[in-house]
Length: 236
Image (cartoon, rainbow, N blue to C red; front, side):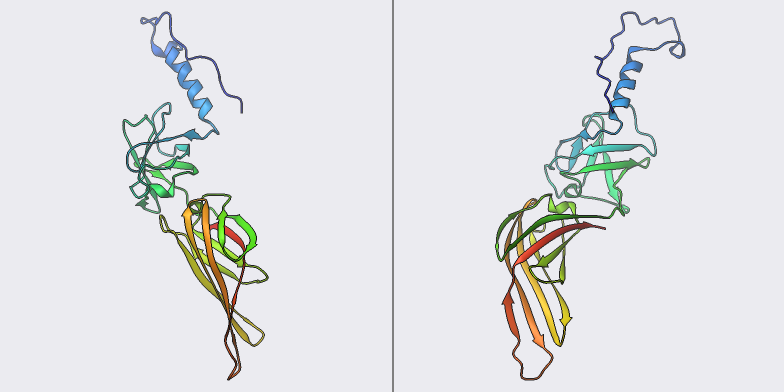
């Protein structure tokens, strides 16, 4: 959608004697431009103190209004998230499922927030899955295609295996580990993966292993080192 690009209007004659209902003022034209240009565009926020974010939008909030925001990194990701639409003069808390969220939930994301008359509401229930990395290595540093904290879960697949492991992603928690198991023929197979989240888009893969437990007495349990093949990010 094309933007309105004319310069802000400045009245030469205010025609003070004419009622507002019977004239178009410079501020009316500027508000129209601002409102139209906001449609479908993400407003780029700046970080304030703690978990505060700031943008400057035209008009005032009414119930049901939707604002589209590109959030930056928060000053303190562990602080409660608030958004100002008047450049930092006043703030509105950001909520999800009835509770105020911390800034790490929104930082570095493109989001649509709905105003309920008191708070901005973060949408829930949107399912999304994205391949964050693929390869074939036993350990080492990797770069992800997106901020891992944008997702609530990760799914890990090991090379040559059909079993997937589900790893929960928690705000500001950098350990990445979990396991899974399956029964193949007469053998119980248990998988485990270990890694560290170094930054929101980089990880160090430490190791992945498979333990095979045959269903026969006197048979040795075996352990094999495995390679990482895929890491998916998932939101529910």
